[in-house]
Figure 1 (spheres, rainbow, N blue to C red):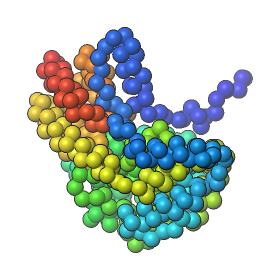
Figure 2 (figure 1 turned 180 degrees about the vertical axis):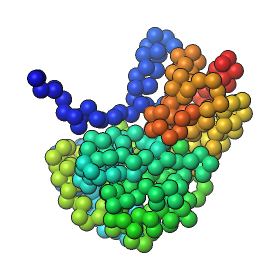
Figure 3 (figure 1 turned 90 degrees about the vertical axis):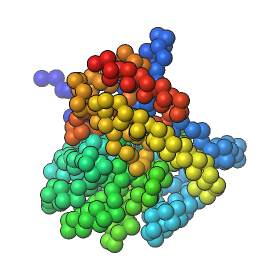
Length: 390
Ligand code: PLP
């Protein structure tokens, strides 16, 4: 018998649907079609100029070599101060680990804490890399369904029923991708109580923490007893429109600092120091570009959600954070996959089927409103025309 060419682990890896749809949309454009891009989850703004300049100056000053794996002390200090201030916690630079984006932490946290026989609870619909990392590690994925009727928040009682002695890790994401949902403070307290009755770690993915339209999203790490077991994850991609710089960081419990640092030294060695110094400028410099970006996202949301709700057969819960809307198209005579597929092919609007985010929100699609108001207006017109043609 010949040996398989690939490992079981690698064949269990999932992917991000957004990249596949982007490739198809680009191919249509290459053939002359006009496509409105609402599929990709990245701010359509430039990195703030003072941040880009700091990166360029750092390159010119020779910060172009290997550096400390866990991160430059300037960035660990700035990130610790930022997280302490914005999340109402008290933590020092020794708790902070820096990596090439927030994404590696999803993988590395699961690899460091979970293996076969362990269960990991994660939100569904949710960022697809959670389930992929869990399966890769050989652990058992346990989806925690999010409910439209609760604004796509977690139901703490349901979480309680899923927690057991095999649960090693609970992943939470608030504000959430793909729904824009936020876990309210009262629910988060109940979640905290339930988790504290178990020995599970928590990965609190807060990469959209700065992009909220009402009250800030409360952080689980700020509740008593939780900081000690929470990987509090944030990054620069969304907040500072720095997706291509690949810079993220997490405040992690003491026992995890060394394992996560080892995973980084074994994979990427370190984040380029000039990228980290741009990150320091982002955290310590003026924040007006972030505020302006969030105000623009809010104006787009305030246009988009009522416009979607005005289309017969479409209903959309108002997202409270991030830059995604997750309309329900379940009453239309086609599946979400067919809807996304045909909308792109027939009307030139690229968005994602809810099936790219799990199996618990059939009949939904994700719209990223990281696109100009003018593009959104044209997209809504095309969606309304497409729906009317069904
Ligand atoms: N977590 C969530 C919920 C995301 O939506 C994303 C990116 O889309 C990430 C993490 C990864 O972000 P980064 O670019 O920092 O790796």
